[in-house]
Image (cartoon, rainbow over the protein chains, first blue to last red):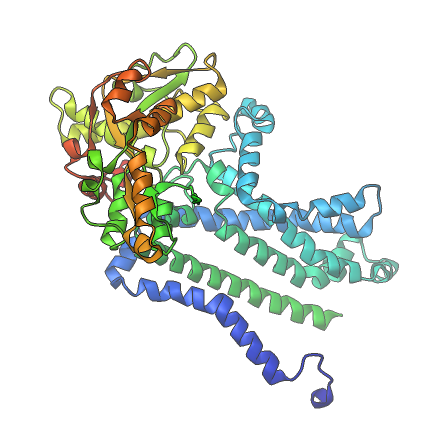
Length: 278
Length: 275
């Protein structure tokens, strides 16, 4: 009701909205719609043929499967990292905090080569796992590893500010009312941080789906086994098959859009629940 | 005058030129990349006739690099398909030397007694079953072989093999020449549209002509690219082991035909990985 009188920092809704649409249009919508328009050069049969061969389907499974697993690992461990960084003081905390952002800054090819060097059978970590019969580099496990690495900062950086705002008095209150630690976590902390956690998960997932540079070094790139969809797109470009490449890109875009939409709905639901409970 | 250089994989460069990178000349490692430019009208259709020797001032071939002492006893293409031999070859769909290796193996199989299309296909299938890691580029494959210590054999360009051996040391790896291999021409061309627009035709042509001079041929030979000049070839005869080399045209008709039959979607190479 009182919204009409609310003071806005940005000059006028019309101008700000116009700018938003122009900006999103220029940076996001036009390039993406170009991909869609390019695929119209294909007939439906050609399009379907390009995006449904067994090799391509295997690559979707790996790309989206490994991205989801990577994002899930990050959601769990990223939360712990954020928690430690917010709740405890210890020497070297600032340095640790800065380390979290490194996967953002590192060129992905460097990350890929470094991870492969460590986890290959003759690498520091890989040579320790070899006697146990665990192979990481050049297997789907390696893909998950690379995607986990590049997605780490997202969860930490989205959850961290929310945890900082969380008043520890709430936890004390919960404890004084007889709640166990687990109850406090599930009923007090989790509902508050869940929307941020989901945002971090979605960002890490989206980043992983599009990742190319680090994965191609550690994956081994064997068709049907360790080949990711972005690599197949590059492969098609190398054959000068622009239409086939954009067809795959369109499928990836649609998949990603649907998954991100789902996560957004979840987030909305979590937000509402958090609002109701507090 | 200044020469601005841009280096990347051949097909990536060809795409960049198609998309408007203002290059006056291109030097590639296979004819298909220049054919693409010709099909877009950036290069004359008969570009192979514009410079001597099909517009290729030097060439290379596919040879093997094996671990010191050649523990698996690899001598020829037939040894690469034996069980237990791991061969590192980059993806023929994304890397020029992967493509040349595939075609070399196919050509070798055809030339065997009773060799035909289906025996060649079976041979190449067996070869790629022995490939543990399919890197996207030649350098990636080199890293896999040299740094990760994966594979018994690396198949790549002759000039690369010497470079790698120099890097790793002769006490680590040995070079093996197969009984027969493929001729990998490094073609060059002038980008018509760009030189006309910039008025650089004379220098562009002079630069490419220079690549055929004895001076430039010797530089190429020093870096283990096989020269086309008779005099320079003779001078460096001891460097380049003489083995029979077949061309893509001799065995496959043309690059376009080879590309279509073997590397288009769903063709020979894809079938290797399908059950």
